[in-house]
Image (cartoon, rainbow, N blue to C red):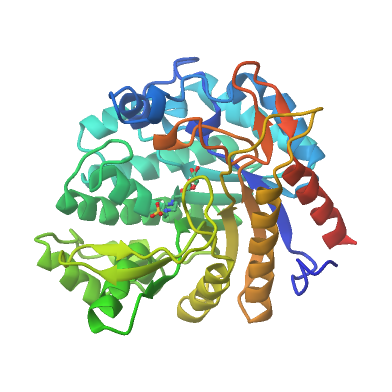
Length: 444
Ligand code: GBH
């Protein structure tokens, strides 16, 4: 066992992750209807360079060779998401057999190659028709999601052991309905708080549905970081408390402890909004989790501003990625130790990785040394957390390959595999080779 992985349990698992809209393309094939990202990305100015996921990595047509590539990396697991408008067009009614068949073939292909499928039900591509009916601020969307979860389970439940309901509900609620940086691009704080509750309710209803069908491992994935006050000035301390409240505790307290945090409800009320919880909702939301998916990219030091609802990020002068996110591996360790103490749910890193301005392919090689060092320092940070008592079971790198990076389009590359968007050629970067070797060594 190498330095990097020292202290990780013998059965610690490794994998890579993607999401449907970011890689599949084939946006109008085989009965797929539009999602909020198809609509949003067509709005002028919404996505850099006017790009969208119409073609993306063309994974829908290249799935078998992509799975062969995944297998060659030597990973244990592959995390992908199902496109709701592909398998249940419009978000209601019967299954679209052709769309579902794609995922059925994907799962078979993975199993045949010895890679465990890890399925995420929702990675941000809400059927546009459900947005037109009110979207996540509308309570009925939660019930539609639970029905969709059941349909996917009918088709794939016999072969998929691990199910994640939602990817990063913070992004769906806040970026989607408050800042408007993500689809559907609405800007209304009160609606975003309604979205938070209905996303959590959607998770809970789907979790009950999947539990009753005997799913082996069930979870949700949250994006999190550490929020540190810039000074011991009580206003900075409060800014960090609020950011942690709206970023982490508003999700995990109801999920794990069955209640919303009091201080956060007060903050929300002060901004003229509320959480539309009805009696019985919190029992549904706190359906026991087998695994908490943790997505980690960076951490922030925060300073209060004149606007009590906002906070300013204070740069710490550390190296940054191509996203301008500071590289803070120690934050990863403290986050995991804190989650263990406050919530105690077994964890898996469902995403971690970085965008860098990679050099072009030269002699069939991409020397992405920055990404290698990012991954190395962050996997070490996970191992340090495990040595400090955090129960972390596995690590999935974001991402298998370069893909559609939401509002940033194709310019930001997170892959350990290079994608040439002209030819759709895939080239393993140095980071992919490094990761494959790390996996091999960690098993030795
Ligand atoms: C994930 O989102 C997504 O699940 C995935 O689809 C995406 O491709 C990947 O990460 C890379 O972005 O902007 O300085 O405030 C992560 C979203 C990234 C949101 C970090 C919060 C905080 C940094 N999060 N971000 S900053």
